[in-house]
Structure formats: C-alpha cells, structure tokens
Amino acid sequence: SFTKGCYVGQEVVSRMAHRTTVRKRVVPIAAEGTLHPGSEIRIGEAVIGAVGSVAGEHALALVRLDRAAEALAKGLAITVDGTPVTVIKPDWATFDISPQKPTEPA
Image 1 (cartoon, rainbow, N blue to C red):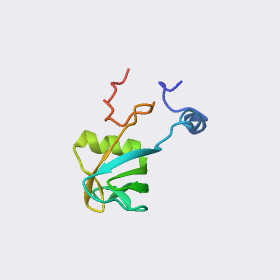
Image 2 (cartoon, rainbow, N blue to C red):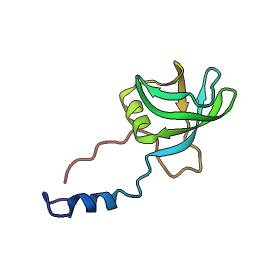
Image 3 (cartoon, one colour):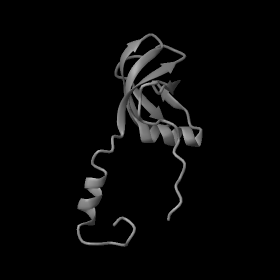
Image 4 (cartoon, rainbow, N blue to C red):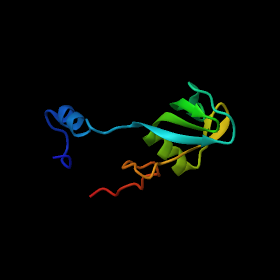
C-alpha cells in the first residue's frame, strides 16, 4: 500500500512502481533564430535537454518533460543559446508537456 507509512521493502516497491516512468522524450522544438545540433536546452542555469537534428528554426530535441512542464507552470523561459524556444507536442503523442495540476492527498 502506498497510503500507509514506512514499511520493509518500501524502496524496492517504489522503484518498481515508477520503473516505466519516462522522463525524457524526443520532441519537436521551434525557435525564432537558428538552432545548432548539440546545443543545451536550459531553464535559467539548469540544463533540461539537448538539441538533436536541426532544420533551420525547427529541431528535434531530447527534453526532460517534467522539467519543461515545471518551467511552463512557473512562466519561465526555455532557451537554447539564449534564444527562447517552444516545445511542441505532436498530435500523435500520448505524453503530456503541459503543467500538471497538483493532486490533493486522499
């Protein structure tokens, strides 16, 4: 049970429950300037991903989705080399990039 207090084997059970949680995904990004492969994607000083293939102002990037959602929730800019970028959720994607609403404890 995840609702009761500490118990023997808690770390193992928790690790197995979150084993399939994917934090990083390859997603399209767009910028108002030229992007370069290998550039770091940042929120302030924190690195949350890296730019991969580039086609002008659009690129594919490996991004920590949880960190991107936190930035969007706080209104922080996601940047590459000082240029603001937009993380785009493809129509076919089953994951979510939008900020998560906090759940109330039961």
